[in-house]
Image (cartoon, rainbow, N blue to C red):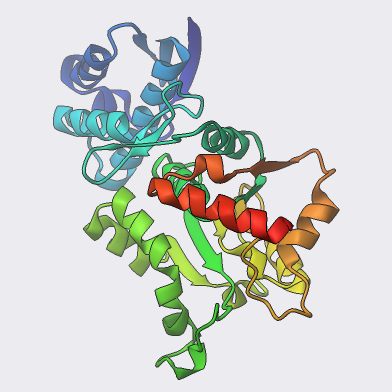
Length: 315
């Protein structure tokens, strides 16, 4: 059993605890294995680590609620308990659950390497996830980013990718650069729709709490207190990759995903992803996770297709 003390700053204790401490009693009923004790302007929580983390998150949400609305009710407490239990899962959860989707179904790391990716994101501020199509590297990365946002570990989620044409001519599409590349970001939108209710996702995007943009839009920025995902990184140039990596600000995390077998750059152009991996591989504070055809979770034929193409490439 461990202890944690939470200080109520600029909050009258009786207004926060409720009449006869009913708000805290409501919270205590939800966590019967833990003890919650109010002393002065402090709340002492004793219990196992998973309960302590959840109770702390609920209390922090209730404090934010009080500062915004000036009061906390038993109904508010029940609402935050329900929300926290639905969304929060410890990073080292044995069943691999990352969070719960919009339909209530669990979103999990389904393979050993996907679980390694989850652990790497937990352990490192910068992670490279490399592997072929269908291995779930982008989906798992988006899920980790959404969980960090929901758990208030970051204030912003930024997802980007390079504007490389992949056999199609972007110039013939209508609109500006962002509008032209949006169809190529469709997998990102699909993943977010699986994880965040439509109205909430719309709210996040309108206020740029979640930002999806071409890599060119990152130039000149410093990305603080954010979770940043660079997808399809094999199609960055070395200069673009260096530009992206050096955008990282305090209290931020980055995941770089890519498949070095699907480079769409001109044949005379080096891949920024391949070069970054070569240069940074020995940096201890950076995580590297490699996924393979064994991690493919699409139709079973996809794994066979990847293996067949791999044999031809190696001949």
